[in-house]
Amino acid sequence: MSWLVLIVSQSLLLSACSFGQPDGQQEESESVTRPSVESKVVAQDLSIPWSIQKQDNVFYITQRTGGIVEIKGGEKTVVKTSLSKPLSSRPEAGLLGFVLHPEFKTNQQAFAYYSYDDSGDHYNRVVALKRTANEWTEEKVLLDRIPSGQFHQGGRLEIGPDQKLYITTGDATRQDHAQDPSFLGGKILRMELDGGIPSDNPFEHSYVYSYGHRNPQGLAWNRDGELYETEHGPNGYDEVNLIKAGNNFGWPKITGDEKGESLISPLAHSGEPSWAPSGADFWNDDLVFASLAGQSVKRFDTETNEVSELLTGFGRVRDVLVEGDTLYFVSNNTDGRGIPRENDDKLYAVDLKSLMKEE
Image 1 (spheres, rainbow, N blue to C red):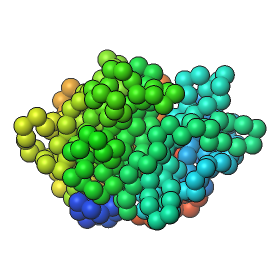
Image 2 (image 1 turned 180 degrees about the vertical axis):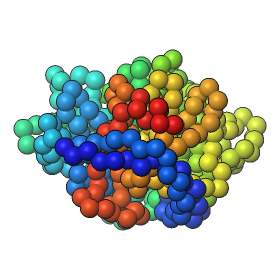
Image 3 (image 1 turned 90 degrees about the horizontal axis):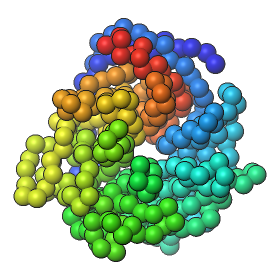
């Protein structure tokens, strides 16, 4: 693998998103060069990558257009996904979230979130997949008919320290429904790995764990087991939230610094410039998250609630994965909103200790 020089810079972004428009579509940036660190290209020529997983020495990366890329020892293979419904080609839709089963080594199972069209209607679903000799096969539908719209699909899947499956869903541009606990859009959902509803969920007989979300796309737990979330806001006002069971995070009643009775305001927000935050992970006590419109990887300090820029120079960033002191991330310049560079998109690796020394 070749080594690239990463130029870390600081950007000021302006977003053109409105309440019903796509997230992170337009950006203007002004860069100030900061000290360089080395980055490694782990894989290239990815097609709209969305979610990164890693088991031992193998990476698993979903492509929004279909297929799961498996990377081992520098060799890249696109493994077919055999799904029971055709993938939707609508903006922000397709094969999105993906997470390996905790017992993947023995059962070869994983979970996926994908968008599909059905007789003029549009939905998202959560399914269990099985890795066979030549493909990933849809074994079971765990949750279906999650609302889908022109934009705001949500789509992140993560398994929490409680061994439950957590799912982010967007409001599907039906913003008022985010306040309705019976509506699956604009929520964080929580389910058993077999698809059942956990008995300790905050709403009886419901997958809903928290509500009042617009388009959440990042989930990560700190060392104390607390759940943090990143979320796309309207016209900027993107958020970092601390998620607690049953809480209402306010969309569309409040945004930014606004307050409301029984509504939870974010720990941090972007203001008018847009981050368009996506995948997230923890490194020590810092939340590290991808930024699409911000064209960067950002860091949220959980002690000060301040957001700073870790690195830029790769265009749009969709997902991050922290393993030890290594940060892996995927660019997303082939999604129709970025400017593709040669051999985009790519999976990169950066040493976090070296990066922190350069700050």
